[in-house]
Image (cartoon, rainbow, N blue to C red; front, side, top):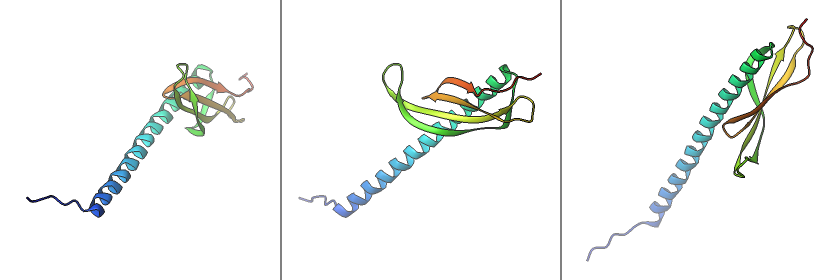
Length: 117
């Protein structure tokens, strides 16, 4: 009877390769979701600035904080805080932030600023 011999070294190499493929896949998935979150935060910041009649500066948002928090159903999700800058008169720069839980915008905040005259 012929038996099939599985070399333990080759088996370990296959598991090692599978592990690294899984790590790479998770990294790609996280990066893709992070870019989606940044795009949503940018759109929310731009829309809010337009509603508040202020000008968003530099046309960008940047992630300032990332942590895990539970949503309204008690499930853990990523809480992200994106910051951006805006101006009212063109001379002074102020900060704003977009808070997201998972894929959902929770709120957009502008720091206190002077109103346009």
